[in-house]
Length: 460
Ligand code: TRP
Image (tube, protein in one colour):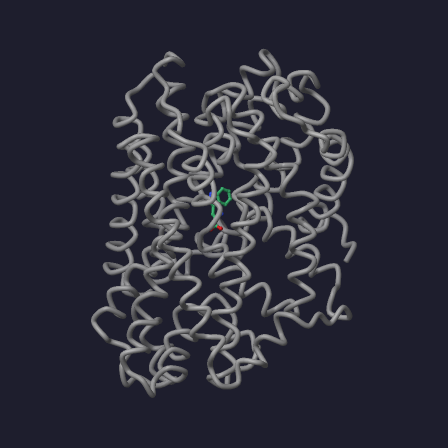
């Protein structure tokens, strides 16, 4: 497709909100509190913020540079910048990871939609702690319900993606992101005012550095990649729609600040309420079922004395999750749609339809791995777990490492400088530091973590 017919985001704010929409998702409100709970609270948060600053922002800037310079999908971008080399595989691996993550992410996103309807129907009212595990187990093992919700989520994503960059993605993000911030802050205020909230606050704010181990650092870095949407060319694809006046350094900083703020706010919503309801940090309470077993009960107990409040808090909380998940599924869908449409010269609509059908098909197997297919295991994991493991622990860090190497070593530094300074009209005093990180710090750090995670050498 001709580049002149490509759309751009309509404004700088629209670009920031769309990229922030991609970054803010289940990773912030679901995965972050779980990781924080299991890795010691405040100390984990400090290591996490360190990873965002040291690795996240430079790699995000790299994705922005590659995308904005080439104005094309992520696989095309690598080919364009390094014709005739094997770098194109980094882009292709990215598209594949986007496809895989979208397939299983939509399953969990579907659960958040089901729980929103349950909350609206006031289904949680009067239920006690022992009811929620059964409600969740019944739901996820019922093949029809999970499938239907997964597909519904995929269809809504599809509808927004086919409307295009400006009137689909940007418009949706501009309405939904502010709504998300308001709900987030309201819920945090409610939670922090609960009796006994101080225990939760202390957990989030008072670091116990003896809790930091090698494993903490590994989890913090994996979480940073996942949460910032890095490593698969997602933000590279979005940057291909940036205008020439978008400040790459500032945008990377803003998106990272928003993403980190939302993650920490989720902690402020979840931990004071969890401690108030008398939960401990045992792995069953703060595991993957946190949002679907622990939290509905927490809302009943914490706000149950004022039924309207517990109703509103539950509805808003699940709605918040749906919105956060949707802006992220849109971004993953867009990575693959842009690739299919541009590389195979198809209309956006046709490309998106292929992506939606293919992802839904794979999603079916992921959804069923909680029910009829739960006995089907590859490498000892269900399909859902395998996809999650392979994509976040292997594909994303590998992708991130190659992106850092590509910009740090391969690309012409003059071109990198031109992108960072918008052809000399901005100052970018941080450029040398960023290049140093991309050349040495990021590849070495990610390399060590990868080797360790794959179990090739056990360092920690
Ligand atoms: N960052 C999103 C979240 O926190 C998920 C996501 C969207 C993502 N696009 C991505 C993760 C690209 C990795 C790569 O939920």
